[in-house]
Picture 1: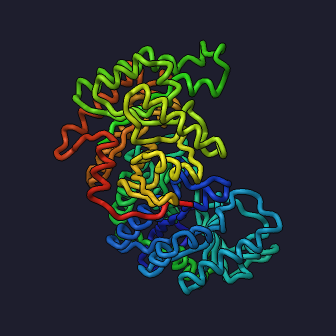
Picture 2 (picture 1 turned 60 degrees about the vertical axis):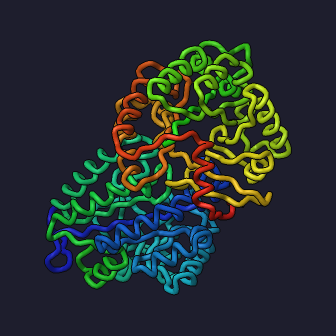
Picture 3 (picture 1 turned 90 degrees about the horizontal axis):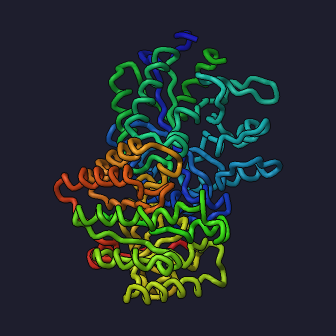
Length: 270
Length: 259
């Protein structure tokens, strides 16, 4: 697995910071009102996303935000701001549907696609499935809507070209992520790990992936509760940015930016 | 800095079993009344702090000595349901439940409570309206901001929100069987980051013997954390009612309540 993949010239490692907006859609989709203990999603729009935008601007990080259609309707100004300040907006379901969608999938993907496209004036090219729920149909439906990448699968340490109906696509790519380690949710929802220990964990993950193929995708959430929009956890994201920047040949990409490069060099990828 | 104590005693356990079964594994609420609340009162006295106790009225009626001691200590008593009801499910009974709790606390303490915190953090879309109509000044149930804010309710009145924070709640750690060390380490890291931006620190402790801080070793954790915060310049402790009044005077802008 070592060193056989190539990245843009002079780049040893690509690093992608990805934000799943997860506003009130997360609760509304589960038939909970965003009140009291269920108001964590409101933190995304009120504090978490603005804090991230300042952080990414300060370090000039081309981060990617995955936004549910409902959240774009609930916080249109916040989502427009993400785009206006130069960051990528990708799709993330309508009501953060963390369940099997069946026949509804096509309509829901199209609905959120158009909400985001109309709101920011540019159609999303990337998708991440809410709660990691994806079907054998998802890639084909995304392709029909013009998507260039998905980032939902957990099955590899590198990007790979999409396969639709058994056929390799040269113009669509999968960017795998890992929700059990390179994601804030389990660490703050289940193991209640102190922020400083999470930073150490992620630094070691980065160092290992840097040494191997040089592909690092980190996922975090601006919401309250188990999310990372709060001051202590936004600081560890800043800590990761500083750690990665110590490596001269590591470079930050948005997933859309990396998709462009990978698709132009698709022969390099499985 | 707000130090808040959720009084949650037998009313919590009675959601699990009938009164005749409030023994054995269902007696942690009683521990809070026999031991926990007294230790926490000693801790507050040692630190010369005035805290806010959120009290289910049923527990106040059944533990009048403890309520008397809280009042003697100069602490604020605020409301937390009558018997720890899930307010998101009360529907037509919500108003009478809020009124019953309100009147019971007023009778026991001689003062109408000014604040409310939802049992289990659950509200209905009408809760805030009811609270404003009953004269409440603040709610402390949401988890969606680093600072207080003021909501405009459908009743035409406003209510101050004093947001809570899951990671500064003892039950988050002890209820999931994490160690005292892990709670303390996290609290210090959370406080450091909140202090840096000048945010509201809303520490939430419980008196109970299972997920609360009533045990001696856990009162020691709270003691160390309070000492840690007091060492920093410009850290100021208030009761929730004091904070709500101050905030509303200095930040008059409002936003619509959700729903």
